[in-house]
Amino acid sequence: MSSTLELIRERLAALEPEHVALEDDSAAHAGHAGARDGGHYNLTIVSARFAGLNRVARHRLVYQTLGELMQTRIHALAIQALGPDEI
Amino acid sequence: MSVQDTIRQTVTDNPVVLFMKGSAQFPQCGFSARAVQILAACGREDFVTVDVLADPEIRQGIKDYSNWPTIPQLYVNGEFIGGSDIMFEMFQSGELQTLLGQPQQQ
Image 1 (cartoon, each protein chain N blue to C red):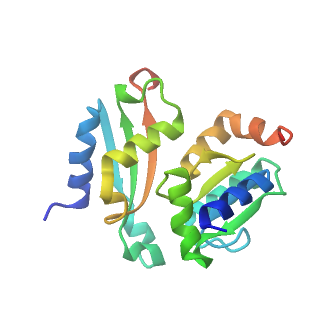
Image 2 (image 1 turned 135 degrees about the vertical axis):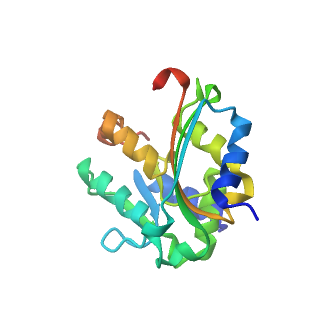
């Protein structure tokens, strides 16, 4: 079975990102109630798809791309979503 | 009244509403705690919090209401603003202070 990090990266490839930085912060949250359901992750992603979208729309695009992972393997995801000319 | 109606009424009757895990005094999640801290740092003390852990229907209902899969969620004057990452970005840029400083539009 693929690791959650691999699964997240595979899904995010659909956004044709120029850059993806993904960290697993699960260890820092071990033991708290929500950690049973899935891991904590920290994502910085740069994609041309975000250009012209506001913050809410960018995050929704990431959530939609990750699909059911948000309800299964991912308990919490910190997102920084940038356009190519914002870095 | 349906859950969606209850949520709609809550976010329209109160200018600033934070759906979170736990209470402002005792947050049950680090992201919710951060959201409360950001609101406090904006000088807004009249915000209302809704503890989604107290009601499974609200916990799912708020995700459906905003089409947003995570908690916390901030609403200002009935409008969904975002989660804790967006709150922090808007706080850093000063946008959130401006938004929260505006009088309630009714």
